[in-house]
Length: 342
Image: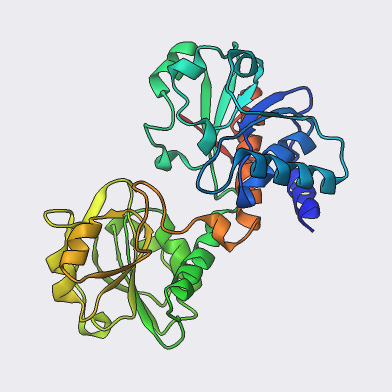
């Protein structure tokens, strides 16, 4: 049951937020767990929401209340539709969750001394549009990113499952088929670890510095962003593409990876957009197939929530633990760094 997974992760991380006030979001889908876990760990929680394409405020609040009842605990969660100065000024921990972003000066001017902001992602994924880093430093607000590869968080090992789901959703199968992974970030080796045993061949284009991180069984094709495909992979089933920064337009005309390079190296290129922008219009003009058909700029083409609750439970609990550690001026949990200070 979901409540058992929440309790288990809170226990595994020794998450203790008693006496703390957490300002976070109430959201739809798997992200519903964030305020509930914070409250289960003892916090007084303000859960802010707004109507989006994923659901109305009433729908989100109703679903969250249902999960609260299912836990069997008396949880201290207050639902808010406005980020008022009164609410912001009470918070010890403010998560950088979607509904709260951007955490700019207009919001953060109300925080009290000692408030901290945990990022529910790794430091290299930080986006300037999420929060005003300079203002946080001026005001003495500690910001810490989450080491998602910490053994007690372990989110990155779901990346391969996400790639598999994207393959299946695109109408493809890994069995007896070859794929090419084009990557320039830390996702690549984790995706490859899952795909290599289940597909006929996996060719890699990545930064040379990442080559040693890949498992046995892959074929190194070229160093990112150079596209140089050998005969074995020209007829590959699809190209799995993930490049950071995610809001940079990587594939197009005059971009780091020119469309003509893709067309000349692959007989029938089909791009699976794991992460990283492409010029959709230019690709369509050149009859270059891609999936999904549209991805909002800076967003991933598949989210961890699409493979279930587990990665989100681990990620959000890890982020809350980062908040707890920041309040204690600590960065390690069980002798391993969990917090990367920005």
